[in-house]
Length: 224
Image (cartoon, rainbow, N blue to C red; front, side, top):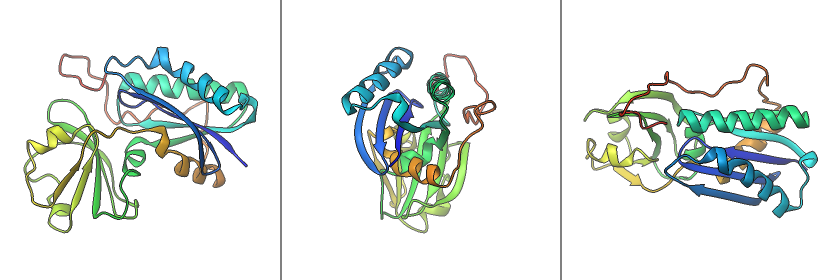
């Protein structure tokens, strides 16, 4: 029996869940546009543990969404997860954000998980209908030819907060859109438990978020 606390703060959604092996015990999350994760995250962690009647000492590991995504959100989530792991002397597990997002779609063609970056740029990764990764995460500028390789082969399900931007550029008949879905710690349980069993832990001293790109502070920056 492994209690794993999962933390997801890569977008405007601040999300904390507790899993007992593969069973969801509790989840608290809130989507706020002001990126108030620094105020909410530890409150959510405390509430999830109290609701579940679990002591921090009962935790087997902490799992955190490592990015890409919001610079501010990722820093807050990773710093909190590392602090808990140091204090409790338990392992840290990291999961790529777009893999978490892809878990919302099963047995449907090709899944392209996308998060909004700056201007017409997105962070994207591609998965098959079994949620196996078939193209690594990268940052790319959207054009009419983006993802044509996949659109010409099968129905493609776009999911994430970049959908509005993608719809303006891509009108292929095979393009399907799953709107209003953000990465959530609810989708981290299976992934974190698998990594826990395989001892895929991070080095607490050296682990950093997967920013993918350098921070750019300007009025165009949508990943705060």
